[in-house]
Length: 281
Length: 221
Ligand SMILES: Nc1ncnc2c1ncn2[C@@H]1O[C@H](COP(=O)(O)OP(=O)(O)O)[C@@H](O)[C@H]1O
Ligand SMILES: [Mg+2]
Image (cartoon, rainbow over all chains, first blue to last red; front, side, top):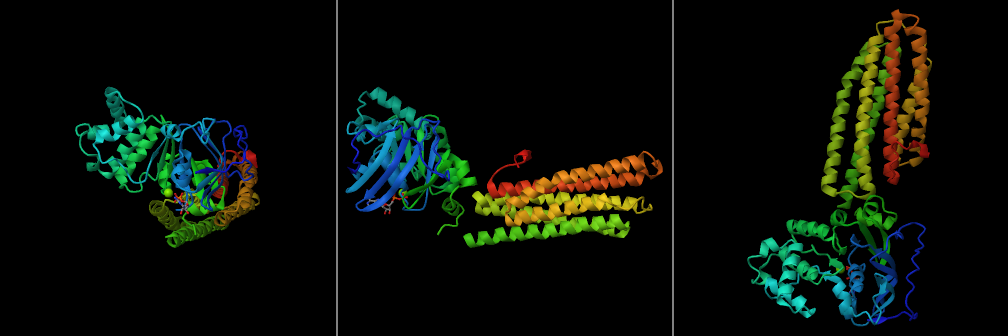
């Protein structure tokens, strides 16, 4: 991924002011954001996928990202932990800081960043190994050697992911023997084991039945006590149930960002209203 | 899906409109019975209330179904919430029309004590409020809703004037006519309560149009 910024100096994080006369993008300047995004542009080849995104992600809150398919939701959250680096011929411009530290700073290694900003994907993607190894493996490649510590952290994260009671007697069995919902919670446990500060969820319930979905939602509300959460979802009701803030993206633009209640009760932009009331397109 | 949803919303809106016309009819015939001391008319008004109770239930069921099936959000959610409350207010207004009809029955046995002056004025003001409140609802008109809320003062003033006049001229000085004077005081009170329900409706319209809750905060106008 190429960084386009001509200004090679450290970005000026004091420039918090966002001019938006219609108050469609509401940045709460009284809160110190966990992640701050300013004037973010993103390109795949010549196609601009994200246009001038300005938003804050607040600590220990759940931020939902909604919008029609292809509007750039996944692209956006993948930039937040630089998963987007893996896309060839992509370009980025603008500023993103994690606790005031520029995430594109050459001294901030993407590996370090991804430890602090973890990700859970749409399809549960456990390794074809035992339930226990799924977590242990991630810890080992992150430098945890002590087997006692590995075991402790695995149990703790399984508990925190509300999976432990269901699997404690079969930790040696293959992760692939678990149901879809359990696999997803295992992926969450694997992510938590690394002790991140932020967890990015990309449509985590898209392939799950309603009961497994309810469990994941319950879990997200529980995890909010410890982590800052960003969740991409197509389900408005889900955004309403789990999130504190909601961002509506349309064709690469951030159209509206505000408290979830405000966005769903009285959106400021007609396009947001059309989308959430099903009058879109 | 969105077509069906729009149709259902329109259906609810026209049911509300229909119910509001029936409610207005009820008030008018109760007032007419009061004015012309027409017992039969008062009775007919009281009987017709059952129809409005039925309409209230149908509208409530339609709203519940719409919420269940469509999970309305934003302006649609505000519309359904406002409709549910307005539905209740209309039903209460119809009950007050029945109360007025009962006052008409009470006074129908006595001769008129004086020509009506302020009572018709009060009735006109309240009817105008109701018409405006319903219009504000169907047109989502913030300004008309505000007008309704501001009329409430006038209604209170007229009601007080009627009460004081009847109290001092008849109840205190001619106790033998206290019964009829009391019925008229109550009728004025019923009209004033109808005005209060119109204010509730207007507040719901303001919520629907702007998501602002203005209940108990009228000083902002
Ligand atoms: N790796 C890629 N290479 C080129 N274009 C991509 C790539 N990934 C996504 N896109 C394009 O970027 C746009 C945004 O995609 P995406 O962020 O996946 O949207 P969403 O998650 O909102 O559905 C789409 O037009 C998509 O086709
Ligand atoms: Mg996506």
